[in-house]
Image 1: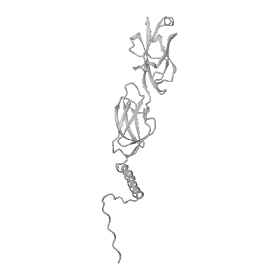
Image 2: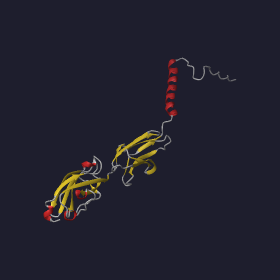
Image 3: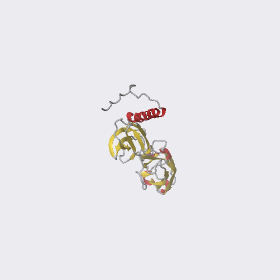
Image 4: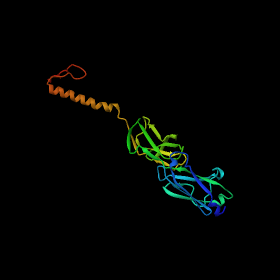
Amino acid sequence: MGKTYLRTLFVFVFVMVGLSKVQAQSINNVQVQVDGDDINISFDLKFKSSIQEKYDIEIFSSRDNYATPLAVKDGKLKDVAAVNARLTYVVDGATVFEEFKGDVNFQIVATMVYAPIVIDTPSKPSKHKKGSMVQVKWHGGIEDEKFSVDLYKNGVKQETLDANNEYGTYSWVMPRKQKKGKYKLAIQSDSNSSNRAFSPEFKIKSKVPFIVKVLPVLAAGAAAYYFLEVQGGESVTPPGGGESLPNPPELP
């Protein structure tokens, strides 16, 4: 294909981003320009919720009914950071569209391959009694990803509480015999072990025994009893019986 023909090539653009409705907002301001034998395709790549997100970019054309991604002369296609920057890809039109005549549609696909896990709640350290419930919520990860929820104590993994979570929330009802200490919940991507986030620390303390709760009440009741005995001036039958103690024997 020569330069003269490329100038008469009719170019149209159809944009598709990933598979989700939210990701479809990531590509904006698409422009296609013919420059000699080259076709320059430019667009803005916006991140969804974090500047650390990464995408794989694929560019298709109607030449083969969008079957095979086009090779590019210039532009990074893998692990592209969505930093709200303008991206430009150069396609060798003379090679790709050799012997081709007619209209050309382009399809741009940006598939999210990484998004950091972010803990939403809890947002600060907390304390819990044994047998209570701790709930964690998070967002991040890629489309249809599953996560594991792990329990850590003093920085050491204790157990996996949930191995295939796909809901972004988990409620842990701790055993009544759970040991005291400082704990955290870790959320980890099943497809990327380095994508992991820890909840704020929470302390587990013992339940207050029932006898400890009752004793102060009993002590207060006894104090009130003796107070009334002294202030009233009358003898009050002590608890446990109404008989008086015998007088001690007289000394010889």
